[in-house]
Length: 218
Image 1: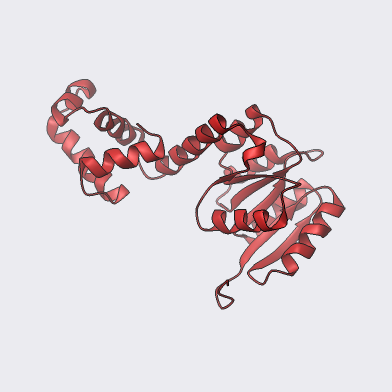
Image 2: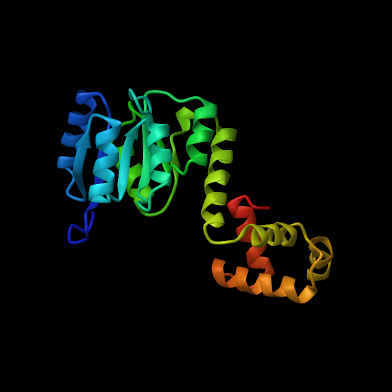
């Protein structure tokens, strides 16, 4: 049972099909843990609603006139506003899936997904996870998508040089070898590692290597 005393998950719906929007509103109205703060039929209204309400999640249709879902994603990426984005689509190909992940989406769901799965997707996305509906992509691509999403997450914490150091550590190189490859002192490498451990909350090389493999950095 959800904790109804907790703050509800605030949603903005953006889809140019009124029937879809009304159906979603009906679905969320029956779920006390969710609150629809705006339901929009155009991309322009959706952008305005996101900027005004600062929701937790935007449930966004890909194919809309004038400005599609990717255009909305690019516009939001240029803002200080940073809600989690779940793309809602009737179908999506591999190229579009990868582009969506590169633009920072947190979930991709098909419009015919059963309601319980959609609700679970939104709960997990709100909790910080990523969700790619398996029917929208093959298993191999789904793994790639997850690695891309994980790398984006790590890239928000580590600098490009620190990620380079992590990859070398995961490749089995010791500090002296890393220093030689990067043309820096061994002390500089150790400083990088100390900062990396602090940022990723790991205790040493073994945990760092395991995390690198988990996140697809290695």
